[in-house]
Image 1 (cartoon, rainbow, N blue to C red):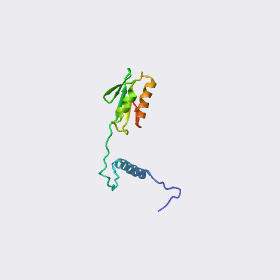
Image 2 (image 1 turned 90 degrees about the horizontal axis):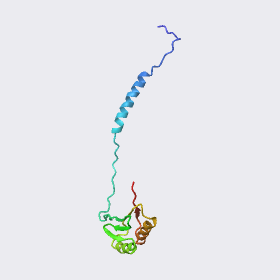
Image 3 (image 1 turned 180 degrees about the vertical axis):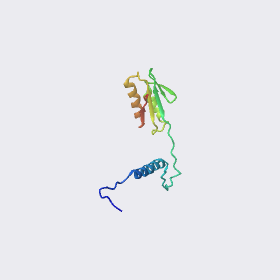
Image 4 (image 1 turned 180 degrees about the horizontal axis):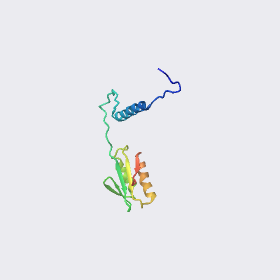
Length: 130
């Protein structure tokens, strides 16, 4: 055998790249289907205490300054006293949602908000469109 020392050996990496691309494609197809699940033992909760959902209080004021609490109608002038009496029947932890017509004066809405706060409600929201 005669070796020609001028010829340099060449490394052909094309088959290696082909095999790696096939393995990558297989991994990409299988990976989304792998579900990793770990067993977790949760502690037992108290079954004696159940949470009760408190119904919210809806207050709406139309453009004629008529105030409606849930389904009861009141006049704006006597709203503060009437709402204080009405609130005695309600849970103070309930959420109050105030809906007012956009043409109303800012002071009208703030007076209703002040009456709700004075009655002892802490969670009050002003409703908007959007």
